[in-house]
Each structure stands twice: as C-alpha cells, then as structure tokens.
Image (cartoon, rainbow, N blue to C red; front, side, top):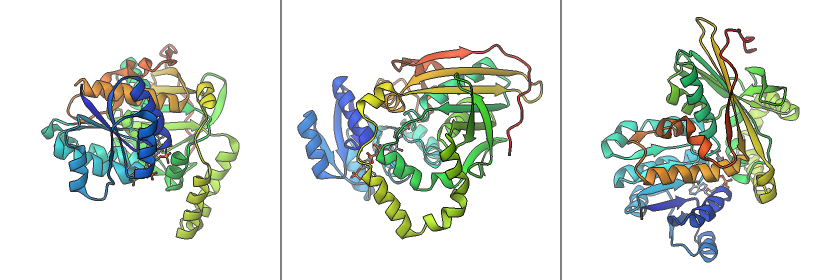
Length: 363
Ligand SMILES: NC(=O)c1ccc[n+]([C@@H]2O[C@H](COP(=O)([O-])OP(=O)(O)OC[C@H]3O[C@@H](n4cnc5c(N)ncnc54)[C@H](OP(=O)(O)O)[C@@H]3O)[C@@H](O)[C@H]2O)c1
C-alpha cells in the first residue's frame, strides 16, 4: 500500500485528518517537531510516528525518503511549505498541503519546472481553501469559456482555530490582493467591496487575500480574478482601522502578545459546531467585451469538514497516481466535479447565462 507522511499531525486540523486517515485504513505515519505531542498521538491512534523539525534540509530529505506522499498540515505554511517541498523534490515524494495563503501557493508554483523534471506532484491548498472555490471557478470557466473576469465569494461564519488565528495575525489582513491582467496586485484591506447574494439575500462582502485567488487564476487562466468573503459589520470596521493600527501591531512585543492571546483560545470549533457549520459559495464569470455573464453557486459542509475530507480525497488520488507531475491546482488535477466528492456538498446551482452588466465594484 502506498505510504503517506502526515506532517503537523497533532495540530487541530492535523488531528482531525490523522483520525480520518486511520478510519480510511491508509498507511499513515504521523509526523511533527514535538516529541511529547507525537507520543500522545501515537498512544491514541496506534500508528508509526517520525519526529523532525524543518530547520535542516538534509534531515528533512532523510525523513521524507521512502514515503510516496507528504500531506502537510503545519501552518503558517510560509514557514513549513518550502522545506517540505524541497525534501519531496529531493526524494521523489509527492507533496500536498492545506495552505490558504496566497504567497505560499505562488511560492510552491515556482517549483513547477523542477517538479515536472523530478516527476513529483505539488498540490497545495486542498482544504476548504481552495477546493470548493477552485472547482466553482473551473465550472464557471467551462460555462463561459470566453470569460475575462471572475468574481468569487464565500459566506462562512465560524470560530477559527488557534492556527488560523495565528496565520491571520502573521499579517494577512494588512492588505488584500486581486489578479488584474494576469498579474497579482495588492489593494487595501477594504478597497474593493460589493454586495453578493450567496443564496440567502444580498450581503456585504470584501475582497480578501485568500489562496483561492491564485488557484482560480491558474486553473482557469482567466486574467482578472477577485475573491470576496461575507464580512459581518464588526469585522469590516476592524479591517478599516487596521492600517492605522498596523505600525503598533507590528511591534514585536505587541505581536507576540497577540500570538499569546491567540494561544489562549485552546481549541478550534467543537464537533457539534463542525457538524452544524456550512458555507455558501458564489461565483460570476463575465466577458468584458460582450457583457455575457454566468453565475453559479455551491453549498458545502463546515470549512473544517471540507478540509479534512478534501485533503484526504486529494492525497488518496495523488497516491493512486491520478495527478500529473508539476504544480497542480485542485480542479486542475481532478476536474470541477472534485468538490462534489465531499460528502454534504451540493451544486452546482446555475443561473441562466445573461448579458446584464453588474454594477462595478466600488474602489
Ligand atoms: N486551507 C484551509 O481551508 C485551511 C483550513 C483550516 C486550517 N488551515 C490552516 O492550517 C494550518 C494549521 O491549522 P490548525 O488549526 O491545525 O493550527 P494548530 O492547531 O496551531 O496546528 C499547527 C500545527 O503546525 C505545526 N507547526 C507550526 N509551525 C511549525 C514549524 N515552523 N515547524 C514545524 N511544525 C510547525 C504545529 O506544531 P507545534 O505545536 O510543534 O508548534 C502544529 O502541529 C493553519 O495555517 C491554518 O490557517 C487551512
């Protein structure tokens, strides 16, 4: 049976993925840098484990050697993706992760040529960010092949885990991004807003720097992409004042206090919250020249449920040799229907193609 190395196995998401991997009967080895936490997990799951940190490339390659695929759940991925990708390229293992960070997706893509030469699959962002939105983008591009613009959005209100909070505090909110004419551009955190009907009436949404932006662009080749998220009012206010607070927040003592505060939120959403959670995704493909427009929607279970199921669905298909070598996106590797393999996901709900022009985004 092909072997999977699960790095960051004892974090919040890693723990959920580790349990599900064992339930699926996969040949999984638990890995991370903390001996004590790994030992505790070995006692719970009765699986082999490997302790290593990511500081020494030779040690990382030595640890990865012999595995068919690495599934990385250790974030922020700005710290963990590159050393593990390099270890995979060195040893011929495939690489999968659950990053939602734009710079990480872009960085992993830079290894594309090397990965093709090494016959290695690099498939980042197979969590909630970016499977459903990437598949929705691919579906819309199939519906409107001449699309020049894609606007995508998500409505998912939930309590983040400690790791997600830390990733946000690392600075993701200081700016946002869009793809414009095929280039990744920076915009202010609340620079672009619009209202979106995700399926329960018009809601205010803000363009956010989610990894889905990069995957949607690479999957579809559409040059102009925006990714919006429904943001409740208190969060919108916080985003607006953030630039003024940023010089203060980025001082090392304040930043470390914030991280400690994030560390006080002991765990992510409970099982009950995960069972009840859901997300509504919306997407619009548009052709600037003739005004043609297609809108589709998708409904998924809770973001963490999608992350656990989606990452393992992806890892299993990579282990089965179904993904090509080089940098891959979720829908690029497995097609738009890949999201529908996640239990509880429904769609695509398509509105008829029309030629109505939507109001321009406010800038
Ligand atoms: N794509 C998505 O939709 C999606 C969904 C959920 C979460 N995420 C992301 O997944 C990541 C993990 O989330 P979580 O909730 O599981 O966080 P968590 O509970 O804090 O777990 C983080 C894990 O990463 C490990 N880690 C962090 N930095 C490391 C480093 N430099 N070297 C080695 N190990 C390191 C931690 O190990 P130690 O305890 O030893 O530090 C821990 O095992 C976050 O970045 C989050 O944003 C993405």
